[in-house]
Length: 275
Image 1: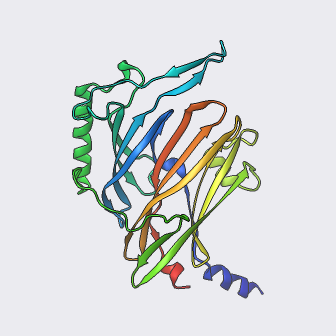
Image 2 (image 1 turned 90 degrees about the vertical axis):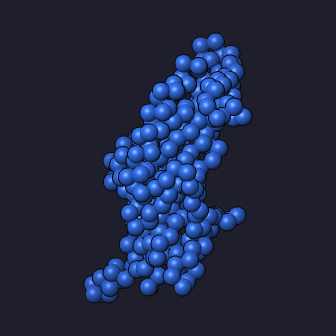
Image 3 (image 1 turned 120 degrees about the horizontal axis):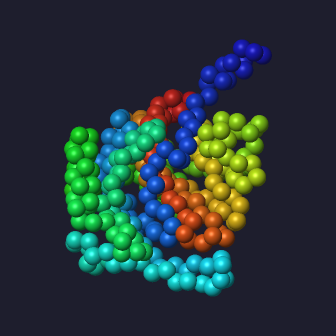
């Protein structure tokens, strides 16, 4: 029996686990993402360059002291070349698989206060820093690259792996911050039992789990979390997923929202497909 259990354990493909917080905080508050453009990809190195265009949206916020609603409007920052999109911002980022700290440069910040608009000298300096980092990574800021696959209407991705086409499916589960049931995740995310929950997303091919994406979020005050696969990049049997993880509080309004853009670890499907 022990030999059989050992054989089963060895036969099962390993599941790679990754926490959402290793990505870049793309937008927060009532600022929304308008577009995400990959500017370069190296799957084997686990490296993706991105241009993220965001836009500040008007929103209504309730004053807790007076119980009156206040309309918050975005500011026209008048950035060079952005006259037709005066409420937009631009961030450049280099995402590294499994890295704790990502590199990002907010070249133009969307704002609700004129004093928060990015000064021209600051924009130029950040753009120069981004260009130097992209050049070091052998990527160019001026050329977009496409995904190998994007999700269909049901959220599935069809990937060409060698001479096979495989379908990647995801399933989601939400569970409490139980330190006994999930000690590593609770500790890593500093999840609070009374206030938080954990969203876990499992990726499968041919019914076999190979990747798990997860993080905790504030569940009190009608808090929620959303996960989305934006697309996949493929090199041979190796895959990188670009992911979006959004959290917000239903009671606190748009100003509480936060969106993280991240990439998965480099995932080799050769072992999974061999079973």
